[in-house]
Amino acid sequence: MQVPMLLKPIETTAAAILIGARRTQLPIGRMLILSFLAGAYIAFAAQASNMGAYNLLSMPETFGLGRTVAGLIFGSGLVFVVLTGCELFTGNVLITASLAANEVTAARMLRNWFWVYLGNFLGSVFIAWSLCQSGLWGSSGHLLGAMTLKIALGKISLSFGSALVLGILCNWLVCLAVWLSFSTMSMPAKVMGIFLPIFMFVLSGFEHSIANMYYIPAGIMTAQDPAIAAKAMAIGVSPEGIASLTWGNFVLKNLIPVTLGNMIGGILFIAMAYFYGHGKPSKEILESVKEGIFK
Image 1 (tube, rainbow, N blue to C red):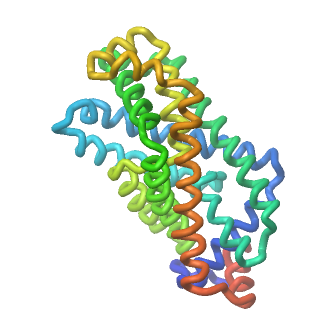
Image 2: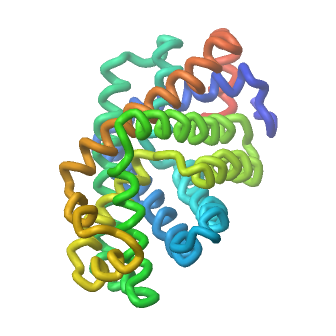
């Protein structure tokens, strides 16, 4: 079958179902490697967006411009993940469409989610640790490190409800980006489809659990540097705030509610909305798309 450059909506749903089913068949070792890389790519994008925007983010009058710059840079992370076939937990919640189509079992889906989430965490924290060793956070008289700390503190200072809702809105857009990438065989079109929703989520300040596996550990690590902590206090961070940057607060005050929100956003507003909105693809459509995308 010659696959068209742009799939019809029902064919995109079929592609999502088939791709999700194939993800659940990966051996654990391969899953961990590909998810480690995905976590690293998201962390690279987070650090690059911080480097591009930290001076702008440090001043109220340029904060919106800083968000814009960060949004223009951050989308590269998901582009790398999608185009190289890596495993990202926030995108893999779309496997629920495969479950709804009876192409995978709940056990296989949960197995994928567990190992991919773990691999994403390891990849993200590895990049944070590597940057800690690099001395890069000392840039601009430690202002980069201070803004890294301040961003992390802002994330653990959210209420549970706010973190949950920001996580829902974030992964609605992230999974939209992934879904759009399923709809085309053109690399430029995939990149553009990924870029636009990711730009919107970063500009809006929504919460992404895997990105936060970089942002908050990076903030925890910067807080251990007296020079960075002093610079952070100079730009308005309190000593109590610095002391609150702990692994326990990372998990309880951000990672749990944001992860739950990401799952709700991706499952409810993308996977289930399109599966039921366009209808379950017929066996003929599934076979036709399978022949085209996996040939």
